[in-house]
Length: 211
Image 1 (cartoon, rainbow, N blue to C red):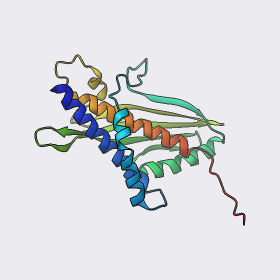
Image 2 (tube, rainbow, N blue to C red; image 1 turned 60 degrees about the vertical axis):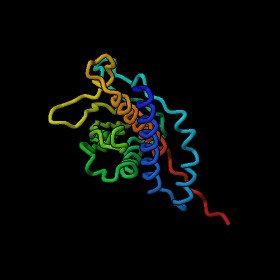
Image 3 (cartoon, one colour; image 1 turned 90 degrees about the vertical axis):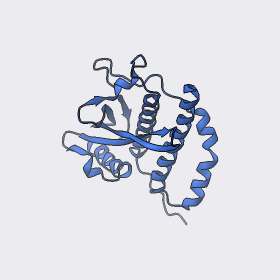
Image 4 (cartoon, rainbow, N blue to C red; image 1 turned 45 degrees about the vertical axis):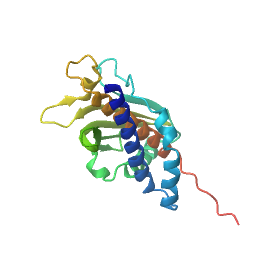
């Protein structure tokens, strides 16, 4: 019964995440929204079949914290890459000014505090409920022809600090199947964040008006 419940919840969570992400994308796509939504739903069966709960999230070997970090080769000066990153913040976050904690163009660095909601499926009432709010730290650093992103310090917003790494302990007597679903949501959201960041950091292609 537990396995069936987890699978059902996972399917629902994946559906919700993909649908929410699609709605965000629609804000920036200049075409008929209805046709995009219908096309999205046609791919849902395939998306559901490919989703699994992550067994391992990237961990910093020193701090043992979940950390997404990589150096990305991208042509441009630190100042140019900084400006591209500012545009990405405006694209990804509805209110980027509420995210920033450091904006340092001279030294090529931007830091911010991001937030994301997590959800679970209530089997008894058969409705979706909020599982809480995850807060994380995002840092972008820029050098000639490359930038580095670091996303870490994931904490569930509570009265006291609650690192979500605790959810990775499957041997915890208090382990809840929803923990795996929450980690899945975090991983999926961060993968998409990184994907949009890399895409938006690419040089803008200006098409010539040839006629």
